[in-house]
Length: 439
Image (tube, rainbow, N blue to C red; front, side, top):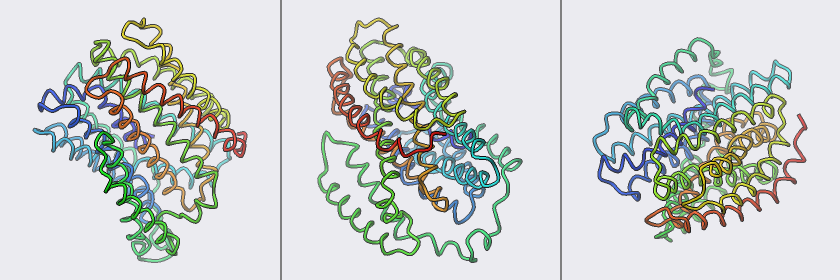
């Protein structure tokens, strides 16, 4: 739970510190946004890759290696003297934290073999809540930490968390199986499908770089994405043990639909995380700690509403509620202006707590039911890839809507886009949710 929380908390904790970091290094928003994009890019590639490695080398080994990288990235960010070094630290954090979630899913899947399904559901719920709550709390936590000790503390906090995580892992997580029992041979690296991993990495990197700056689209990247994607599909269809099983995805339409829901859900969620926070600071004049305190009720509500759904494994109901909130929340944003009372801001943002809370619960349970047992690590990693695809799309939407300054009209432009996306999510959810087990 701690390891799988490190990626979402590092994604969100920096949101309220971007302006302060820009002031420290005399950099504008166009430069500091790379601190967000770098982690997204590293994570989008790293999550399924770590899942693949965990299946071949062992989840405990990969998890510990990831924790070590998180410690290095946190320490580097703490002492960084320029923005490029800080971006490098975020890349290392992205790669290291990518090990947490897919390895956790593999460990849970193996543990589930000897336990009742109800207990498995509770464990999955706890795993989802850990990631979701820390993501939601990351924003107010970042504001509080930055106000108390400066933005560098948001990097340093990784170091003690890593030490705790390593000690708990060595104490409680079972050792990995011997290599021959785990893979059936003594050379698991031969099954890595290196060409598939390289093509996947190139496709995702090119796509995210293209989406990251739609103000000045680089069309050659669009062509590169198409070429790499076609090459990836052709290679993986021929591979005996593919990194991304495209044949399985084409057959398993429910799993593919889950990835689409994840992308849309987090696109909405991250527009609030980054777009609304910028508007609150620049238009409403709130400080970083003020923004954190205003968002805190949403974070608390997200945690509270998740508990009963996770405890009873109500995946279907969670998806329906998420879809409804994805329309109600953006509709409420239309009320936001520079003079809107604070209590209305708090009330409407709490609706997005339903999206951030139940969206993770429902989609994770769906993936657990839909993904083949032998590929759950890569499948879980791919779900996080689509999470960051939604995040980068949100960054592009925010940049196109706000321009140089977060204004009321820019916020309403984002809102109309979110209403359309929420309508799509509402339309596609019933067909996917009805195939899930009720509990």
